Image (cartoon, rainbow, N blue to C red):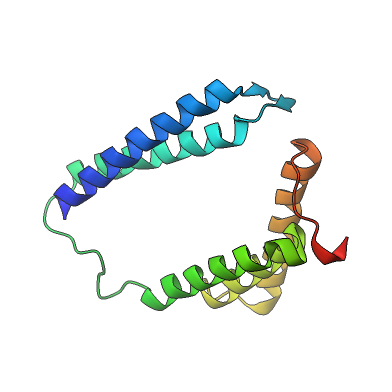
Length: 148
């Protein structure tokens, strides 16, 4: 497994470098006026950092590891995959804000097992923060859905 993790980290590191290079080619713009490659560049940097963390963590740990440990939350992983699929299917219909609220609500309630009150607070605050960052500050076009 360690060899597989190192290979995976290396492949994603090369992929992230390609994403960053192409993003720069598209133009990053400046912080107050981001260009078309800004968001993909940030995503490429994040993916590169996570790839390095995977590789370094793998080198520093000894022993064999398995993909699914007995204490792994397999039901939670399946729930997240289903919620992401639902998010993708509902995004154009309901719009960004409503879909994000639903995604965060169900993720925090059924995966993180927060109370309904905390789940609602987290869902609304996270979604509004994301909306303010992307729609208001970065001026990206987010789907408005039928609620607009």
